[in-house]
Amino acid sequence: MGHYFTNNDNLKSEFRTIIYKRGDEITKFTSDLGVFSKDKVDYGSNLLIDTYIEKGRKNVKVLDVGCGYGIIGILLAKHMNTDSTMIDVNKRAVHLTDINIKNIGVDAKTFESDIYSNVSEYYDVVITNPPIRTGKQTVLKILFDAANHLKPDGELWFVIRKDQGAKSIMETLKSTYEIEVINKSKGFFIILAKKH
Image (tube, rainbow, N blue to C red; front, side):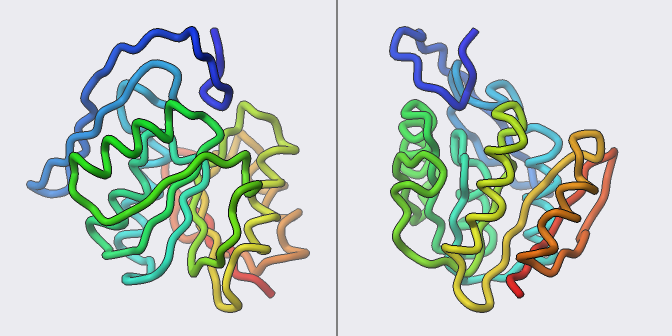
C-alpha cells in the first residue's frame, strides 16, 4: 500500500464523491485512491475548517500545505473569501484539487511542491493538517518553515492530536512562534501560531 504523500503512477483510479455539510449547505468534492482521507472528511480537517471559519481572518492570502483533494483551501475560499493556494507533493492530489476548484467554482490555485520547495510568495495564513505518517521531522519542517513564507503579521493554523505529540510540538515551536490553542475536541488541538 502506497502512502498519500508519495506518487504511485501505477495506482488505478476509483473516483468517489465526498460530501461536506455546513448548516444546510452541501459542497461535493471528488476524491480518489491514493490521497489522504479519501472516503470522508477526517475529523481533524473538519475541526480545523470549522474553527477557522468561526475565528479566522477573511479576505486574506492563504497557503494550504499538503492539500489532499483541496478541502481546506477550497472551503476557506468559499466561506471566507480567501485567496487560496493549495500545494501537495502528490500529483494526484493536485489534479483532484484542480477538478474540485473547477466543479465547486471558487477562485483558487494549486501546484505541486515538496513542502515549500516550489513556494516563492508570502501569505497571511499558512494552514495545514500535517501528514503525521511522514514522521515528526517532516511535520516539524512543515510547521517551522511556514515562518519563511508568512507575512510579518502572518499566522500558521494547524491541527494535531494530543496522542501525536501535540504538547511537545507546541513547546518546540515556541522558539519561533507565539502559540495559542484555539479549539480542542476529541483529543484534537487546533493551534494558532504567530511569528515572534
